[in-house]
Image 1 (tube, one colour):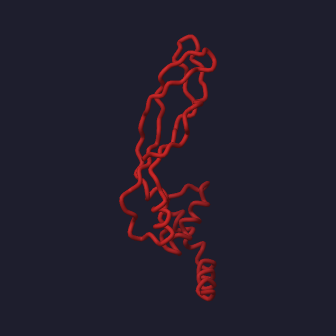
Image 2 (cartoon, helix red, strand yellow; image 1 turned 120 degrees about the vertical axis):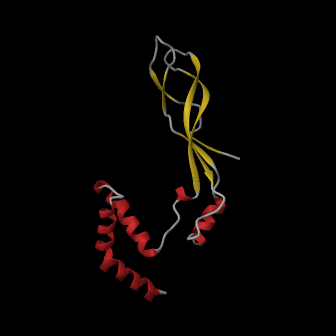
Image 3 (cartoon, rainbow, N blue to C red; image 1 turned 120 degrees about the horizontal axis):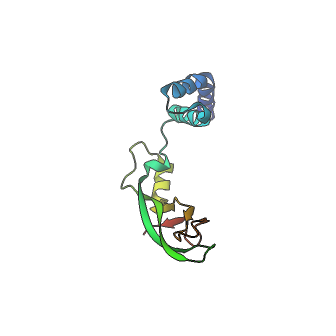
Length: 140
């Protein structure tokens, strides 16, 4: 086991810049995101790990919430944007044991995208922070 780990380390050390250059030439990562290219290179060498976005389907959704402006104290219904991530039925076939364990624990959830809204009162129109609404909500 130790010998295999040392062989892998030596292989990556010798070919690291080759893998890094391939990732940068493909154009999938801009130059200021070089650290993502490094991660992709290591994953290409080791074998594909399943990323979290491959476990979920994403879609945008708007929901209405009753909020009160802290400046003028007027209540109103505001539409907030949410990112809804629903768990897929199956994992990709390249998943390993760790990925299967993560997938078994995963649950569908929503993430609030809007942090600030503008007051609907024409005299106020000030922006205020959304308070009293959870930023993450689990479905089910």
